[in-house]
Structures are given as structure tokens and as C-alpha cells.
Image 1 (cartoon, rainbow, N blue to C red):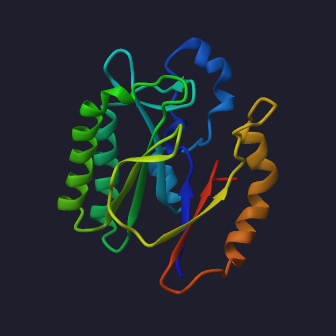
Image 2 (image 1 turned 120 degrees about the horizontal axis):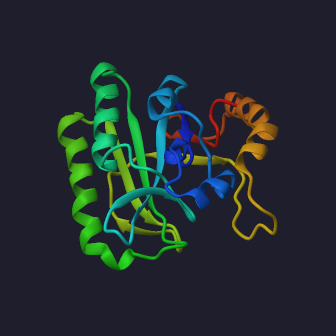
Image 3 (image 1 turned 180 degrees about the horizontal axis):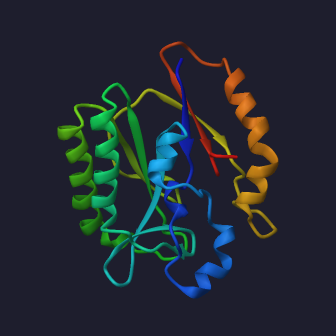
Length: 208
């Protein structure tokens, strides 16, 4: 069994798009490090939250917060992840897209969503020579599969606080600082599973 470090909400290191989003970003921010820095810290499983917004743009998001675009988000992922796999040919990278419709439901634009994500998945299939595995595209509200991705024999362990139904204000940074050290020790000692089933440990603030 291989243990794989995962970044939960890997895109939330970016700056929020609007001033009011900056005020409450602490409730949605789950990573401080850029994609390149996450690679350096050993992340090989990336969880990205995306949305097609009212301006007909793809944006990274998490809940009510939308993040500034460094570039077209899919071009950004292709550029950064392809660069890594081309220089680290023995590494496998896993990508999961969550369509975050909890605060801004644009899943009716499925005809727009599907070809873009199919393009990204096909690009990685063709050019990464199997080094990048795009998993299913999931809709957040009901956790249903919107687009079937590549199969993978992975087990997933969530090492972050699940705030669904939480009565207080979410604060991922505070929770990670209190718990990540303990959970990384748990990851190091984890033995459950069969030898052929790799396990992903999904963390907020992977540097803590």
C-alpha cells in the first residue's frame, strides 16, 4: 500500500476576487502554498473546487468565495501539472474536480461544463502518458458523479474538519494547527488496507 498526501481545496491559496470575500476568506481558505509549493511538500493528490459563474467564466472557488484567476484555470493546471510530471516521470498525480454549486448553482450549464473538463481529462491522458489521473467530476450539493473520469484503485481518508451542519463559523486554519501534527503521525503509522490499494490522506494546510 502506498500512502499519498492530498491537498483539500488545493486552489484556496489564491486571493479572493472581491473585498467582502477577503473579509470572510478565513472560513474557506484551506491552503497557503501555491501548486508548485504543494508539489515540493509531497502533495500528489489535488482536490480542486470550480464553478462557472454569472460572468460566464470558470473560477476556482470554495463555498461563497471565488478566487482571482492567475490565468484560465484549466490552462493554469495543465501548465503547472504538466511541467511537474514531465520532469518527474516516475510520479503519478491524481486530480479531483468538485463542482461547487452550494452558493451559486450553475449546474444547468452542463453543456458548457462537460466539454471543458473532457478536454482537460483527454489532454492529461494523451500527454502525461498515464502520469496524471483525472478522477470523477463530483457535484458538491449531492456528491453525485457529473462526469466519469479515470478509474483508480484508491482509498481516501479525510484528515480535515467536515463543516457540514456545523453550528459555528468554520475556521480551517485553526483546526489544522491543532490537529495536523497528530493526523500526520496517524498517516505515518497507518497500516489498514491491502497492498494493492493505495490510500490518500487529504489535508488542509499541508505544511502544518
